[in-house]
Image 1 (tube, rainbow, N blue to C red):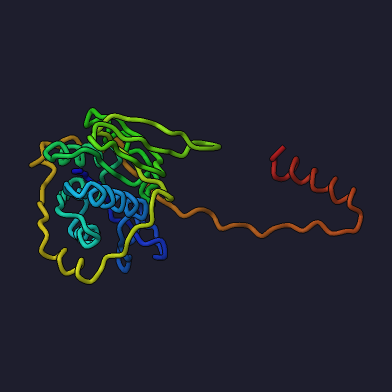
Image 2: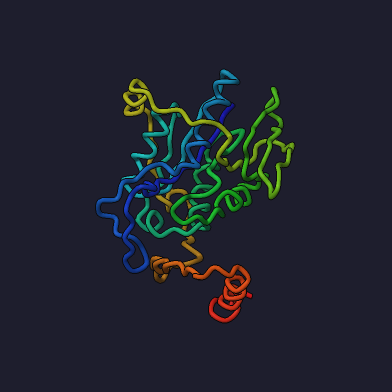
Length: 258
């Protein structure tokens, strides 16, 4: 089974983020593969191993440093990669521009399924999977927690999370699937895998070479940290009824909650 996995490099969740203007201060930031994309890579590898055939190709849009995330995916077991490295897109691309660049790269590949993480943990937009499917002209199933493909690779039966439960969906292939936590347990890259990854091919492309000229539809003008959380207020006294009345007053008059 041939699969494509779209990944993104994001700041590590344990990194101290400092906001500056419309972005973050990148000095000293540790960058990693988006955690949800790890589930996507793992599922693609499992399908290849299950079918005992096919290849896994990783596609990523990002600056020079994104090669680190790409090499991580290759060390996990992916076969080849495409790195879309374009100054006009890599740092300022919104979900639309990102999906357009990824779709242009994917169109030139052979695939039965495209796996992506359900969202990136830096902007939390969660829009790329649906846009990618639309641009490729194939179905999209999001929030996937179980994936089974037919022996003839004509369709897949997937379980996805929905509010209050799950839904089981049968979808023709090829299609785009966004991975949710619970789909699998991503493997660690082995030392032999890390050594092999250094020799695996990475095809560097620019957005212009892929025919993508349309830039972002949205622009971030300013970013700021949320206000510091205020200290809680304790209602003193032994009279429960009086304390309840005071709580109701505070919620109604001070907090304006009711």
